[in-house]
Length: 99
Ligand code: SF4
Ligand code: SF4
Figure (cartoon, rainbow, N blue to C red):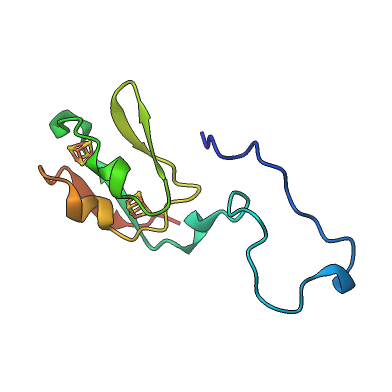
């Protein structure tokens, strides 16, 4: 479902090519941060008023909008809970992750 997978991937040919200090490798698009999550947002779309606040506040751009409704991109969502906190009608619940 992810729409983030079209960017070019940085590949190191050998260990010598790896930078000696921490740095961004140009993109987090291939770092599927969803595996870090232990709680997950679940949206009750029947109660959603389509305000877009969750989309706006998600620090990971992990909320997509499809047919005017928010959809979580679980490949990247870290489970921070900001969307649930900010939703004005509280229709996002943080549930235990099912591994
Ligand atoms: S839990 Fe955090 S990372 Fe996941 S969709 Fe909500 S705001 Fe984004
Ligand atoms: S913040 Fe809540 S009501 Fe607004 S679009 Fe997101 S889920 Fe729907």
